[in-house]
Amino acid sequence: MLDVNIIRSEPEMIRSMLVSRNADTEILDRFLEADEEWRKLTGDNNELRKIRNKVSAEIAKMPKGPDKDAKISEMRDTGEKIKQNDARMAELDSVREDCVLNIPNIPHESVPIGKDSTENAVIYEWGEKRTFNFKPKEHWEIGEGLDIIDFERGAKVAGSGFYCLKGDGARLERALINFFLDVHRKQGYTEVFPPVVVNTASVTGTGQYPNLKDDMYFIEKDELYLNPTAEVPLTNLLRDEILAKEDLPILYTAYLPSFRREVGKHADTKGIIRVHEFNKVEMVRFVLPETSYDTLEILRKNAEDIIQALGLPYRVLLLCTGDMSFSCSKCYDLEIYAPAKDAWLEASSCSNFTDFQARRTRIKYRPEPHLKSEFIHTLNGSGLALPRTMVAILENYQNEDGSVTIPEVLRPYMGGQERIG
RNA sequence: GCCGAGAUAGCCCAGCCCGGUAAGGCGCGAGCCUGGAAAGUUCGUGGCGGUUUCGCCUCGGGAGUUCAAAUCUCCCUCUCGGCGCCA
Image 1: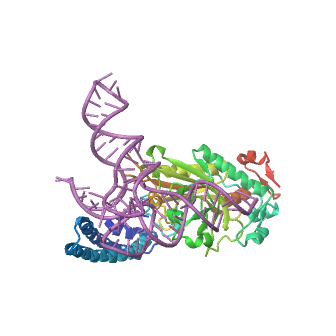
Image 2: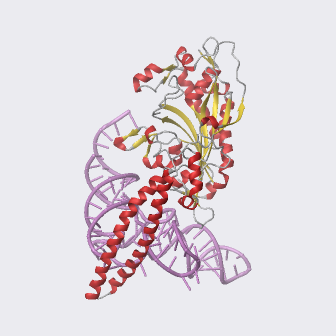
Image 3: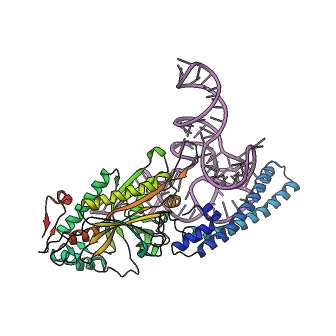
């Protein structure tokens, strides 16, 4: 959510921002129109209330009689007028809120202008792509060959888009989760195990609601959403809190299953690249505003360290305005190389949300004692999404006989085992 | 699921029965005092707008009654306790 003062004072900047993000500008005009009338009525009612407060105090002190009755009757009309204005303001306010909740964050000046993912900037590549002296298999072939991924039975239990890991596959998943969390703990994050369901206030706070609401699983009876990303519960842990300046930065990490309905998305339906339920380890940072862009670089490094430790080739993308998600002002994607299709898989997204989420969640700090509290900045990065890391490991570490070598850093988590199969 | 008790400023808490400017304490900050500190004392310490001394809003959320609601009525949410059920 943007500061409404910015929308009022620089509407043309907001308009061109919306265009650069492929968003509809009609929302801006709707806001400005509603806001103008709302502000006028606010002023009117302020004035009417002032009169009513004053006269009510006089009434309290007046003796019974026609003078008093006249005042009361007068104030009855004033009260009626206030009530009418309030009703109109409530209408306008819901328009304003609807608009402001649907206006995306303002991209940082370093973000390239572009219409879609083809215009993202590749910052650099890391690692050597392995050369194979045989034709590398797809991850699902490897997984099924080793009986460590079971698509059919996963679908039997929960439906299409759900899968099951077995044996060393399940152990590898657990090893990765533990490894990721251990690394992040050493990087300074506090490990958290939050709820897997989140309420509407939480998904509104981080910006998934309303614009991504159809992509989340919703439990109607309890009005709860299945967690779409641990960014939601982690960020909302501190919702409506005023933090002490000396407590910042606050760093949380969590392993949590994530659920996405993936409506209308038909690419990558084979394998585990795009599924409805996946595990993910997430990092969230609550920081002082002036440090957030430097922190984004650190956050990205925190995620990169993991991919490097696994020895997987990857590249860093700086997303352009047209491809960035709703809440962020700047975002890097980390894509791991998958040799079977000669493709890059997005395994991490590291974003600075500036005060956009903090404003929605009302997370503040006091710069100096007794000064006005201000919104903090929030950042979030995946470290990492499990299925795509699994794909990259299976494909990059596969051997000609169908077995998979376990990356060295994971072996301590698998009882010293060196290969699967 | 049933019954009961609660929700008031950063924190604690009074006011509610009986409607009329939200009291007090803690913590924090500033001034006075002091050689310095403590103690003492004065002031400040929710939000928005205007910017000297002003106004409006704010008592978990919403609706209602009233000239006037923290206070009365109704609905909802959350917390705590008891009972029930339960991995």
